[in-house]
Amino acid sequence: MLKRIIAILVLVCIVGASFGLGSGTVTNEGLDYVAGHKSGYSNNAYSPRWSPNGTKIAYIRDDTKKSDVWVMDANGSNRTQLTENDDITVSGVEWSPDGTKIAYCIRDPKAGYSSNIWVMESDGNNKTQLTTDRRSYYPAWSPEGTKIAYSIRNIAGGDNNIWIMDSDGSNKTQLTSGWNIYKPVWNPEGTEIAYVSYATANPSIRIMDSDGGNTRELDRPKLTSLSYRFDKDPNWSPDGSEILFVSQRDRPGNWDILVVSSNLSNPTSLTKEMRYGKTYSYTDIRSYSYINPAWHPDGSKIAFTVGISEGNSFIWIMEANGSNKVQLYPEEGTTIFEGYFYDLVWSPDGSKLLFTVKKDNRNSICIMKLGKTISPTPAPSLMPTLTPTQTPAATAIATQEVGHLEVISTPVGAGIYIDDDYKGVTPLAISNVSVGNHSIRLTKQGYDDWTTSEDIKAEETSSVAATLLEAATPTMTPSVPVKTPSPPGFETIFAIAGLLAVAYLMRKKK
Image 1 (tube, rainbow, N blue to C red):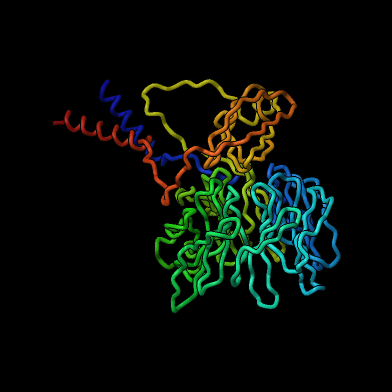
Image 2 (tube, one colour):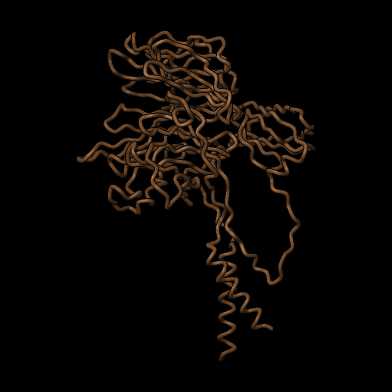
């Protein structure tokens, strides 16, 4: 009997090893072309932006002479034109944090491509011009929605600097003074602004306080005799503790994705190991550039694109520390996609990726639905465990009564947990919440957790408004994330069981 048990243990070890046990893998559950050439337009569609509650998508649609701001439902339906200009182009479309307004730039080719920032209601009403200098672009709302940072191009001198104004266009203030400083990006707290500075031979990332003071700079890439290298595209993590950026530090002419702590120390490459420190042929994916990094709303994952040119590209995903890289589209082993992906952005609930596809010189907007495949995990038990039949989640939602929940907070950008399940960040409208009493918890770095409970009623919308209190002791973020050792998983259990079984059999043989 004991020998039979040991044989079963050995078999379990072998089966477990063959499964390659691991955590759930994010998968591509299908693509939908929702705007542009691939969905039936004769025009281009690009620069998609989710509304803060995830119910709408703003984007740009153009023809050969002009472009306008459009909006559609999250599934691509109800496409509506919001601006209507003759021989004028738009750019820089950005939702306000509360989703009630849209900022954008109007560029007029007939006036020397002058550019000014405008704002309108999310339905296209009440269009208001905020700047008149004819050289403003890259509008960026503060997290509270009370300010807009932007860039101004000095037409005579050729330089760019960052300015800030109130959301109604008043109190315009210059924050930087230098050469080619552009594209401001607010941190989630609204206290700091990251940007790219070309003020030196090798451009790099800088951070300043939101009033323009206390400027600090990431150590610049080393200039070589072969090529000039630079950093660009800073992207704050949802909790504000880290910044993603792309850089040519390691490979002049090719891009890698790096992450650095918010104090600009210890930059680390997340894609270098895909090349294993070697140089590969032009047709090998490990020689490609890695760009367009986008944080998952809870900061746990990063989506990015891989490509060598506008001819071929891929969409990948990885953990926030660079591990567990998975090719989402096209799937590994299939025909290479002949096109280029950009404008990559997650839906507020983290269930979809939104991006622009450039193919055959046409731009289309696409949504990729994401799922999770859990690797089979044989239980290390000699007796089968019976589990009750469970209703699939989609069926459960369809058959049970549900309501809706709107969550706002001061300050905005707080993580929302319903019954300890992460849902996104404030402000957010959450659909299909099961009827009954639920615990709600809001978290934000530097603030005490806020908790309450809410009774959700069928077909009704409940509202929760929270005011977060600053933590008594500021939370210190280490410059290098501390990695907590994981408890031994099934791989370790199987290995130990196998060794014990082999040792016992050897002893019996003796």
